[in-house]
Amino acid sequence: MNLPRIDNTNLLDKAYSILKERIIRRDFKPNQKLSIPELAMQLGVSRTPVRDALNRLEKDGLIKTVSKVGTFVAAIEIQDVLDIMDTRLMLEFWVIEKMPLLPESEFAERIKHLEEILDQASASFQKMPLESYLKLDYNLQFHIELIKFDNNKRNVALYKDMMNYHSLSAEYSLY
Image (cartoon, rainbow, N blue to C red):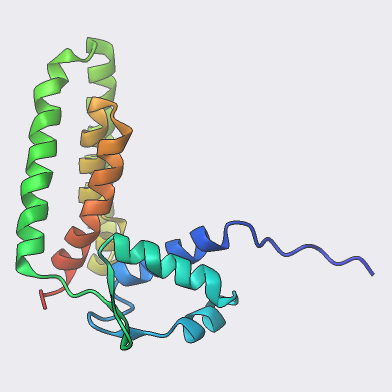
């Protein structure tokens, strides 16, 4: 009998993406203990991709591991948010200073794209329940497109990683 192969490529990336999204959306609460065996069972994978995903999440600052105690979802401190806002402002002002260097046609096209995001946000806000609207995070979409004006992929990646904390702190109180 021929059975189809199960797609098990990039299990680490898939586990990382799922867990990161669940942490950001606060399906896991701040300071909640995470069990590698339980997560592996729920995701239907071995412990190795889960362990590796948790290591990446710890580097992102979204979880913390306490030796001989366990792995926990990181709580956000007020200083984390203040530091992120400083870095965010630094990046955004840097991009704004570089905008005049763009060719006029490229600048106009990018501005048009920003306006489209604002139009979508406005239309969605009028049609959707607030919770659904907030999940679309048009504010983040707008600011990521703004950061893309400088054509620096590392700045975009840095901005996205940094905004994990913004998403957490904006929706929930600080712990």
